[in-house]
Length: 113
Length: 127
Image (tube, rainbow over the protein chains, first blue to last red):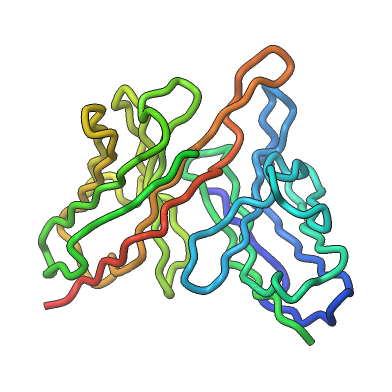
């Protein structure tokens, strides 16, 4: 199984500041047929299901604010929230779907400082 | 707009089989442009992928659960089903169904992400 490791486990950021979350996979999640990294980012708020933010490592899902961005390739990926808003308080997960079984990171809790 | 709604018994006794359903509304379950997955989330193990199933009934399961899991599709009801046998306390979790959607990219079709999730149904395994 591909192991997904996120860092940090939690972070506190001031409103309007940048939040950066890292995700590392134990092997490449690059899909050779389309040269896309099969890496997604989700946001989860208490009592709600995960919500898709980013897919193919860097493509923002429809309706997601442009302060959210994804980058990286191969085994190292980053989710950046450029200017943190109060509504961004949540747990964020990365997920690989290149290789079965699909696997998720352990989650990163983002709070307001 | 596609919506998913899971349902289940809530409380299940150890060693029994839990049966969950996911009602799909707003679109056909057997479209060739997407397929379906089940995940679960527990405090101890985080988010775990259980498996996926296509509209024609072809399924793939997580090897860690494969011996106990069965997924199926009922096109007449537009719903998915998940059966998990011989449950233990470790199977206590919130269970989600989700859609894996696809899109055309450079003249080829690719599945790209789990873009729609249900609200989840809680399963507690306890005697």
